[in-house]
Length: 421
Image 1 (cartoon, rainbow, N blue to C red):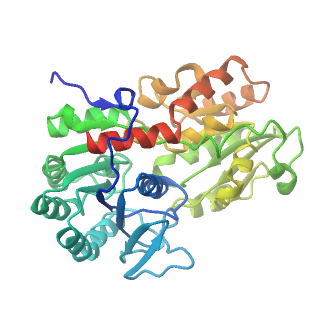
Image 2: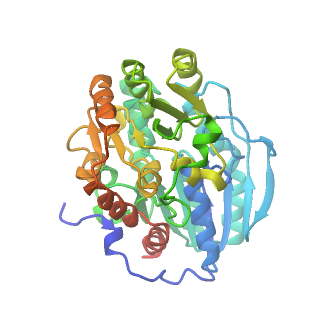
């Protein structure tokens, strides 16, 4: 292959005039989900609307990361309008434990329940641009066919290589016939899009290999709102609220609690240093692995489990950390570049990451973070103890530089350029 994926660094500084265009956004996750794919898809819709695009969304009731419908919503068909965005919500299959094959059934159910809504909106309202979001790829073929029928440009926003991830982290057993069928479907579907946007270089490389068309793939990293997340320059109010002393060293993880996060390694590190009374671990979020982790580690004196914190208080919460922890399962290390990283960097506190040398996460951070091998609780615990003895001052500017590269304004402009270019 001679051509390279389009990158955000090569983006124009304008928005290529999205104004006046009809855009259909089609994905299983959307606002008001405050983390993961739904957060970014919601922000994309808001930005497109702010640029005078006419935006319609087909999605589900907010349910991530707990796999249960949020209060105020029902798991059925409904419509709403928020901030100029028309939103069609459709039901999907949900159960308390969404592991294994159930993680496959949920997106399949979304593809089925959303099909008539997507067909109607594309064939009746004839959008100029149709943007599908992965996950889930199962819903994409019908949208591609309908979009081609009306001459719409088709774009896939890949937040997660769901087929690779499903087999890499064990959601689905690696039966050969199932893997072959899944990858054949994925390859066929990917080739149907005019543009594919993804969030990391390694994901772009994998997508280019799958499609054979590197120039089809664009890289736009997930962003952070630097006006919302920034160093406070003072002690967080959460210290007093949660009962921590000013000299307690807080190791904070905030995000989805699932198979890819490798939180068992972080908590095993907490076991090893429980005798270090001033080092405290705060695990905030929801997800399918949380119950088992609470049952196993919830009685530890140095570990606290919290729910997600309100968006309006999130900067205060991120500034609770003396050290942000970003553990990752080894099998997922190059499949995603965690979206939570931007907020960690923007808060100004040091970051400890579990990643193998040569992975995109390790390469992106360079020497601006503490990096230990995935699954190695001994190495992680030692790194945390060393970090508690003092931050390396020269890393602060490097973290700030990286967070500026992930700014929301630049990310949204690059996204529109990729969609329209």
